[in-house]
Length: 352
Image (cartoon, rainbow, N blue to C red; front, side):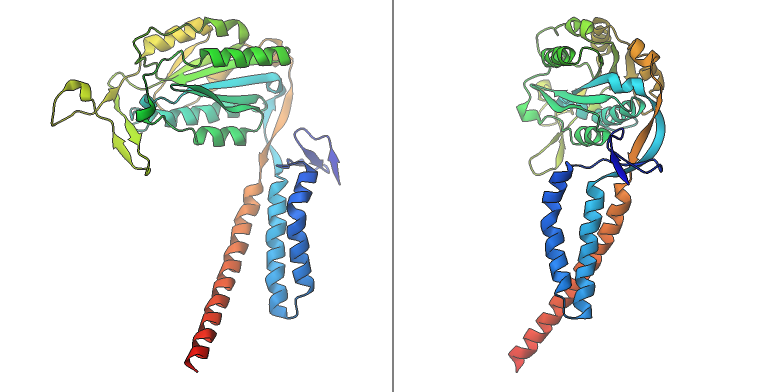
């Protein structure tokens, strides 16, 4: 028996499983009803055993797709339900310098950002998350959601700015947009805690001095500034329209025909200033590692103090996805064999 009112979806008996459908139930019915009807009709009108097996196999494909769409989930680790009253904003630098390869023995800085965002989200499971990126412009890539899968997908697909579109970067670019988002949420949900994680390298390439982040401090309950890069610097890469990468050169040296590679350096002074203005700690991130101490320092008062332990659920749709791939592979193989047989028959007909 399935009953509405589960933590994030629908409870199934007492086994602990819940369903978290990707669409409302009526949406799933509208989406899959034509496929179920067509496959069922073909199965009923199949005149041979071979055809019945063929359409039965396709019926299983549709069934597996339906099961994946309702997102069955099993209990995982426990989480503090105070997080359910917490809004977490990740403000991520996507300027060209974040492609510099001086993180964790030659990896790009943005890779460290992606890993840390996911780890923080895991530690604060149950909270709502938003992703804000900035380069020349600032945009909300992901509005507030408790779906960590959506957050993971959004941060994985976050792209570094193409250099031809760059006009110089300023670390304070996201202040105004972030302030607007924080004020909007504080007015809409005044009882919720709000934290901001700023992730970048602190490099200021415009001629203007960076503006202050102090306007954010009264709107947040905590957070952190995470810095990426090294004092020795790292080479940067630009991605061309055909997907290839090329090293960015430093043409300001006027050393033709041999032009040195452009290097980007972390500016920890700028990052510490940002942290001070926001009233949050600063951490230098040179490699993946435990971020528990970072999340424990978040001060959201009674929201965490008065909370209790609840279960976090993990999607298991991927188990059905692997079976679905197998069924599709078999169906494609049979279709290809049928096509080859038809081609052989056609060739023999022409020869006659």
